[in-house]
Amino acid sequence: MIKNIALKLQYDGTNYSGWQKQGNTGNTIQNKFEKILFKMLGEEIEVHGSGRTDAGVHAYGQVANFKIKTDMTAEEIMDNINKFLPGDIGIISAWEAEPRFHSRLNAIKKTYRYKILTGKIPAVFTEKYAYRHTDSLNIELMRSASEYLIGKHDFKSFTDNKKGNKSTVRTIESIEIFQSGNEINIDFTGDGFLYHMVRILSGTLIKVGEGELSPESITQIIEDKNRNSSGPLAPAKGLMLMEVFYK
Image (cartoon, rainbow, N blue to C red; front, top):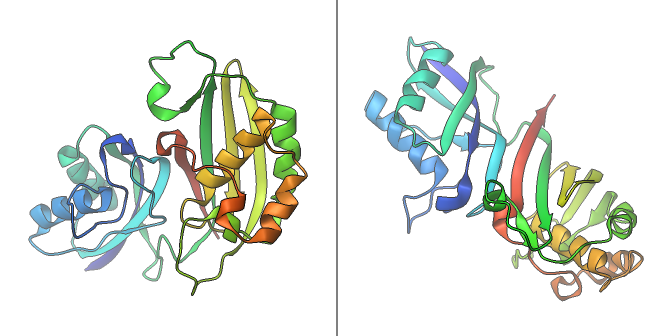
């Protein structure tokens, strides 16, 4: 019996070259799953992820799916895979999805979080998952700037994808910026994100928080449709895929 198995998983992306398998390395999350499935079933199984997180990026709520011929339940499959996964990758739930369900194609929106730690004092247990910014940031200016990014725009200024044959229009539903002590989190929710988009948006908002860019300058950056107009690419370790939404 062919089943379409869906998984919700988490991973620390520090030691991996991203989600998607690549010809020059086997050190990707997708590759880890497919190797385990091959050992379990003796056949090649393609695992689809909801998004191709980059090298060093983490996931709290990644969703994946694959089709296999088996009598095992989704929970039994989850338990078997978890036995062989390294400690920095784990499946937290599994279910049998509808035959036509596809984790990437059926996703309607996603939430990514970018975490920043301000100040000079190390935070040993969180440094691995945040960008350290030694100076303070003006949160109110960052919030004001984020308002200009919400809605449907051409985000060509906020991607490192140099291929010009795909649309760079996306819709950002919300950007929430909240601070607790020296920890700042920026939550981006939208219908899809371009290559490096969330990290460039974060780098741009950091420049606003530093006072190097004004909130109003965001409008011109969007209109420029030029990567050179936006802020720097924020480090990968501060980014985490939090949640994927489906109908």
